[in-house]
Length: 365
Image 1 (cartoon, one colour):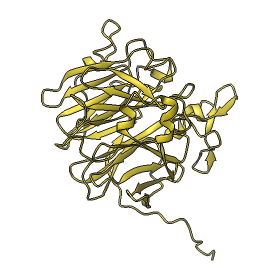
Image 2 (cartoon, one colour; image 1 turned 180 degrees about the horizontal axis):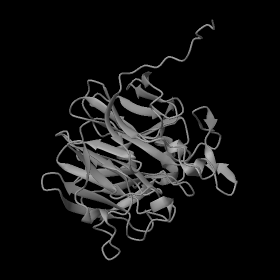
Image 3 (cartoon, one colour; image 1 turned 30 degrees about the vertical axis):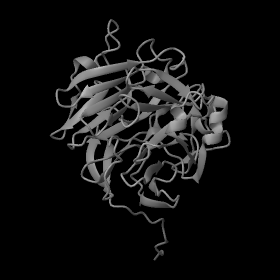
Image 4 (spheres, rainbow, N blue to C red; image 1 turned 45 degrees about the vertical axis):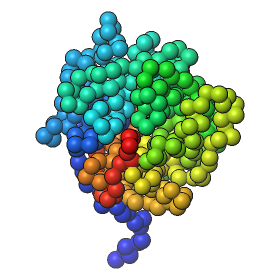
């Protein structure tokens, strides 16, 4: 009789919220009333709608199907390819449209941040970007908000470009003025020495023609402290965590070349896609190399709260009013572009949650 050998221990009480059998999701957000919204960027799957709400265990296009059908005559009021959805805790769903299906150059005038009123389910405002903010290489990835500063608050967006400079895009929500910060610096750029390893294999671009290249993506994960004063961020292909004062980010009298001296380094947290902060200032981050979810306390102490073979690429996080941490798990690393054109993803993709007994960080006083 062969002995049972010791094996890796898994832990964390994860619950399945929703199983996706269609297109691959990336974003999730839970509103203050418990409504759950999902987004599906156009990366090659058959995406019938790029933003959806889960209603009675079914996906419904949001705010309606018409808005999810690209209208070349009206690209500012229709969604092209949405990467991120964020409920702000005060009645608005913010939708970040990359306008870059299949990571193409953003469609001119199509990249935008859209505010949808959750009471009326109608678009309240659309913020578009000038060509010096959304570059031909830009990929708008994730966004965080603070409504305690300025006349109408500020938004902070990561540019996770794979072939151009990474950056934090700062948006004054009162007038739509936007500008790039930390453009192309080390903290928003891919770590050139990082070699991602997922499911025991090196992750790299492997093309149908047999050619290969390193997998490189710039600033992606982003989280904001409960008082709105500190922004945490990380490149996707890196294990490092950085932060910067939001006051400094917004202060355009500080030139970009001096901004790097205001960046704080928090050390390694594992390689993360999405991040989120709770009301006590704890940062939650995925570790896609190790099928894990970590939390980083304000004093820098790190703890793994879930380690599970089902956490196959933890993407976006959201904290609900029910004090659960929600996470999209989408097998991003199994996409055809990493495997010579062969799709290794196995449906369903999933929305999981774990009880953390904490509320989301507030965006307003």
